[in-house]
Length: 153
Image (tube, rainbow, N blue to C red; front, side, top):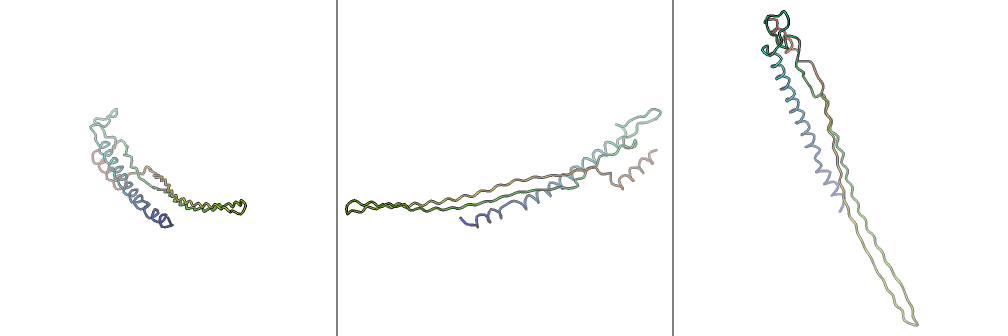
C-alpha cells in the first residue's frame, strides 16, 4: 500500500457535492421563505378576516392596520468539513540463532520471522450553519400596498 491510496481517498471526498448541495438547499429554502411571506401577505390583506375597530363602519384588513408579513432572508451559510486520512505501514524482521557444541558435534538452529502490518483509516465530519434574519418588506411592495390602502379609504 503506498501514498496512492491516500491520494485516491482524498480525490473521492465529496466536498464539491456538499458545496453544491448546500447552495441548492439555500436557494430552495429562500424560495420557501419568500412563498410563506407572500401567503402571509395575502392573509393580512383579506378584510373579511380583518378587524372592525370601535367607531368604524367596516372591517379593516390587518395590512390596513399596519401589520406586515415577516420577510426572512438567509444572510449567510457556512459549511465546515473536516476530513482526516491516515495510513500506516510497518514491517519487522527478526533472526534468532543458537549454537550448541557437544564433544565434537555442533548443532545450530536458526529461526527467521517476518511480519508486515498495513492499516488505513479515514475519518470525517461536517457541520452546516445558516443564519436567518428578518428584513423589511421590499420597498416597491410597501409603496404599492400603501397606495392600495389609500385608494380604499
